[in-house]
Image 1: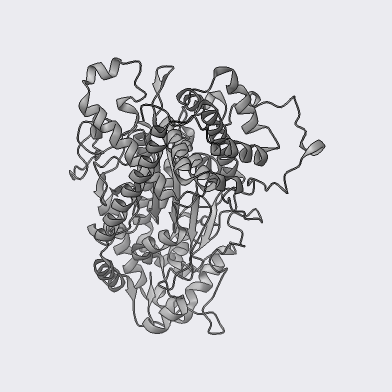
Image 2: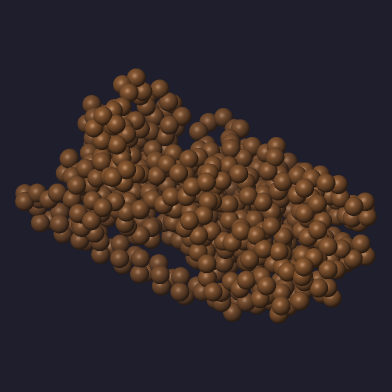
Length: 615
C-alpha cells in the first residue's frame, strides 16, 4: 500500500496493540499461564496502581526493549510520533491494565470518520477481496496436492519393514495393554505448570468490521516485513513478530490462513516492485520501505529458490543432491518438498527424519502434509542411519531380545529404566550389536544440529521465520541446533518460530532445555510415547542416561508435552504417523492444542487386529 488506510490515531492504536501482543507472546514463551485477563478479572482503581520505579528500560531482555530492535521499526513504519514511543512501551510492558488498554485500542480502531474518503473504503474492500481470493487459491492447491492412496501405500510398506511377527502383543501382568494419560484436552496441563489457559478473541474486536481487521493486520505485517538498516545490520521478518501477529489475529478473531494470504500478497507486491525497478536505483532510494536482502533471501529475489546447502561459502540449488563433508558429516542436504517454492512464502519449514531403513524415509514421511510453508527436508547421514536401523532389526531378532518380547517383558524392562535400576546383563550384552552404530548416529546428529544452527544464523533461508519438526534422531538434531543458537553470540532468538519434537532420544537431565526454549518464539512441543521400549532400551544401553524426552514429559514451563501413546505403536511408526500427529496438534493455532480424530485408532484396536510388535 502506497498510502496508509488508517488515520494517525488508528495507526497509534494499532502500534499499541502490537506492542502489547509482542510482550504477551514473550510471557507465554516461559509462562504460558500468563494470559490476557478478562475485564472482570483485571484489577481497577487502587488495585491497578503501577510502581513508578519499574520501567521497560530496566529489563533489556524484553522483546519490547530497544535492544531487541523489534518495536521501533514498527513505530517508524506506522508513523507514530517519536515522543509517544516510550509511553507505548511502558503501556505494553508494565501496566496492570493490559486488558482495558487492548479494549480501548480496539475501540479506537473501530471508529469511522465521515471525512474518510470513499477511496479508502474501496481499498479496504479490495484488500478483503484479495485476501479471500488468495485463500481460495491456497485451498485449491491443498486439495490438488492430497494423495491419500500414496500415503497409505507408504504406511503399508513401512509396517512390513518394521513389524516383528510371531510374538504376542505387549501387555502388563494382568493381560491389559498399559495405558497412560490420555491425549490433551482443553482442561489438561501441557507444560507441567498445573494450569492451561487459552487466548481468546477480545469482545471489543466485534466492533471492527472484517475489512478493518484485515487492514490493521496488513499494515502491521508490512511494518514487520519492512527492512530497516540499523547499526550496519538488517532486520527482516522476525519470528517474534510473526508470533505476535498470531496472538493479535487470535484477539481479533481472524483465521491464521488469512494472515498467510496477506503474507503472500505482501511478498508478491515486493517481488513485482523489484522486477519493475532498477536494482541499483532501488537500493539507493531513501523512500523504499523494503530492502532486497530482508525478506526472501537473495536467491528467491533473483528468480531462484531457497538453496540446498553445500560446504562452500555460497550455496547450491535446492534438490541438487550435492553431498557435503564438513565437520565429520558425510551428508547434509536440503531437498524441496511441497508446493510453495518460488511463490513468495514468508515462512520456512525444515523437516528432519531420524529413522531410515531406505533413502525414501527422509522424504516420504513428509509428503502430502499440507501447510502453507515453503518446506525443505533435511537429508543427513543416510548411510549411518540406515546402518543403525539394520542393526536394530538384527538386535530385535536376537535370541535375548526375542525372549524379552514374549509376554510383554520389554515393558517391564522399560519400567526398570524409568526406575533408574540396572538393566539385566543379558540385555546389555545383546545390545552390543547396535551400540557402535547408535553412538555414531548420536554423534553425527549433534554435529548436524550445530551445522544447522550455523546455516540459520547465516540466513540462507532468507530473513524468514523457520519452523523445525523432527522425529527420533531428527528431533535431537533440532535440540542441538537450538542449543548452539543459544550459545552463539548475537540475537538469534528471532530465527525459529515453532518447534515440534517427536520421539526425541534426548535426556531430560543434563540438557539445556531452558536455553533451547528461549530460542523458539512460539510453540515448543514435545511428543512422547510412554511405551517406546525401543527408544528407552537402546538409548539407555548406549549412554546409560535416565529420563528421555521421547518417553516422558519435559517438566519445563513453556514446553507442551503431548502423550501420543494411543497413536504411536512403536518408535518406527513415527515414519507414517508424524503427519497425522501434526494435524492433530494444529501447529498453526496460537494456543496449545491436540485434537483427536477418528482416523487414529486406539492402540488396543490396532494390536487386536495385527498381533505384531513394531520396533
